[in-house]
Image 1 (tube, rainbow, N blue to C red):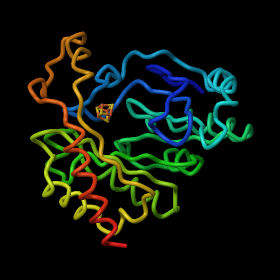
Image 2: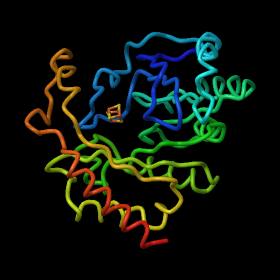
Image 3: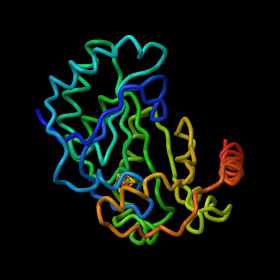
Image 4: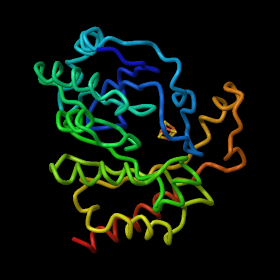
Amino acid sequence: MQAPVHSEESFATLDGTGIRYAVFFQGCPFKCAYCHNPDTQPFAGGTPAQADALVKKILRYKTYFKGGGGVTFSGGEPLLHPEFILECEQKLKTFGIGCALDTSGAVALNEAVRAAVDASEMVILDIKMPDEEGYERYIGGSIKNPLALLDYCISIKKRLWLRTVIVPGINDTFEKIDEYLKLLGKRVLCAEKYELLAFHTLGFSKYEKLGWDNPLKSVPALSNEKLALLQAHLDGAIAAMR
Ligand code: SF4
């Protein structure tokens, strides 16, 4: 099985527990206004990877995965390649290595996607906007597939993290956080954590390199202080629901 890989990172620490080998696939159905990796969006490009060769390469790092580490499939959108991921997951599992899926949920659920999710150790799902209008305006897609994936993960009791990127002027208010909570309802209680991430400007130069217009070029990075306030508001509301 073969899939287009944009890049790999052998000592990733953010997308899952412990030390991770992160594989970023090329291609994404969404077009988030705040995307910091716009070069992963085009479906053309990337380096074709063979599952066997990738697994062999990952095994060289096995010793670093002790203490909860493993592999994270990210993107772009990893679930565009569910058969490839399933093959990797099954092979890595025989060596005691678990895999996380870091996904926007953009891909419609089908048998292959479900199988890749089933075989994963955990799912990290982005909830990008609190409503369909926000998805249409800022993400270039629909909220339906991400919510269907969320419900599927909950139905099979998959270990789950939720994430939302907070962008100044778009969703950086307590009221907006309440809208996410309203959308998700009791479903937030099924997630091990719900993490807010700060919009940053590190990906801006990539838009220039691609010759693309950056719709948020005048938006500043979100401060750590503001992020902490919003996270505390979210955590407090979730604790009150328990
Ligand atoms: S889902 Fe991720 S990779 Fe795709 S456009 Fe959005 S931020 Fe970029």
